[in-house]
Length: 153
Image (tube, rainbow, N blue to C red; front, side, top):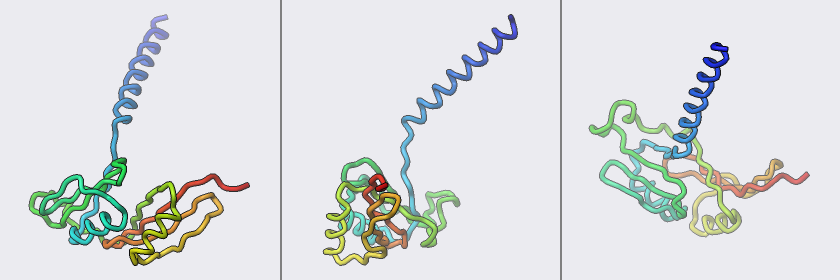
């Protein structure tokens, strides 16, 4: 009986710890950061091409948000003396991409084309249901602009 009570008590404690951990995770927010020399070009690109707004900026850091304020992305100058070595080295320009989900991918595609931005992957439908196209930001980051739909069977 004591063993069962002990196991039940341990299970209860673990369950409460998991519930607390899950509660903490519900408040988690992701902000991708890119270390780049191109703060000015990046700001203009995300603002003028994608409609992002500036949440905060200073001489070495830029935080931008999507038009609906649901997501943010940050940019940091490399080798800044206020930053630890982990945040010093500049992004090398490959091995990263962003996906931006939109309601009307065809409209966004036309708007971006009118702005003279090079389309790296022309708009198309994928067998898994996505309709998307891709561009590249001033840092060499591929941006996949997509409307998710269920695949046709």
